[in-house]
Length: 365
Ligand code: UD1
Image (cartoon, rainbow, N blue to C red; front, side):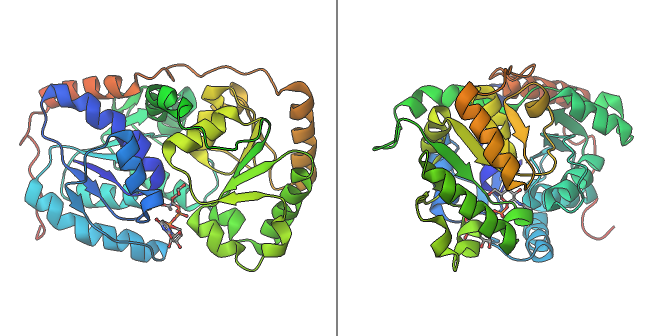
């Protein structure tokens, strides 16, 4: 059984669902419904070729406790009824931790894809989700050596940890040719691409005012394109005056956004996945956060952390526009074959622990 719920899960699940097909295991795909807009969910299923979910928990949004609890309550009967031999959870969203808690108590083994990433910033909801999910997972699939180190330091048994590379890059590699055919009309020859959605940034009105003013100023020199996440759109209501020259657009599909990233001079973001995608593409990325759970994108890749300092953002941007950005390389095993490696390890672990070897605890024990 796989659980997905929010936009960044879909590109991680797609290649693994496909890679597990030849092994013949029956697969159930559960969508928690954490993201529900067509532009945040359906279009990704279409473009990534993911089968329609077998089960949709349709939880929608809410506070963290409400959303997480609702996913747990609605998922438990599905797990009890379908009795999966393995639950695969992805990334660090509320759907990830909710499914991990439900399955660990029902003694269903858990595989965590994208384990071990740490920002060391416990004010981020995702960091809490990462820490808890990794502690109760049985197979931990990591994208980079720093993640292995983090897990070992937290006492995870080394035999559970498998460095397999970055599964999002599998999707990117397979869809780059299609993205080349999805370039939006009227794209300027040079532009800066912006995304912002972290609560720590967009829920802070002063930061939003500062960055919108800065982007507006930058847009007088070079066009700025900004697809706006629903959370950010809610926070921008009332700040209309501040982003005059910036081109705002709705959340983009996977293919259009990939095409936009590939052609951008610079990407300005607070997303996790975009730090990785720009590193693979070799496109300079300025991350408006004080920390990153993906340090390899800074040490090897094209990413620079500018924090929330708008002067630093302006000056790093100027340097990139003049020099083309710092030298960068693609991290080890970010090669488009991560899902195959995960499928092989899952296959081996099924042979070691065949179905039924672990009894379900049920609800009353
Ligand atoms: C979630 C993830 C975050 C991930 C992001 C990608 C958690 C804790 N956070 O954050 O790690 O980077 O997804 O987008 O799981 N909304 C809509 N339509 C939608 C989805 C959301 O209008 O389809 C609105 C919701 O009503 C809510 C806001 O956007 O007010 C935020 O959605 P939510 O799922 O709470 O978290 P994200 O900020 O998207």
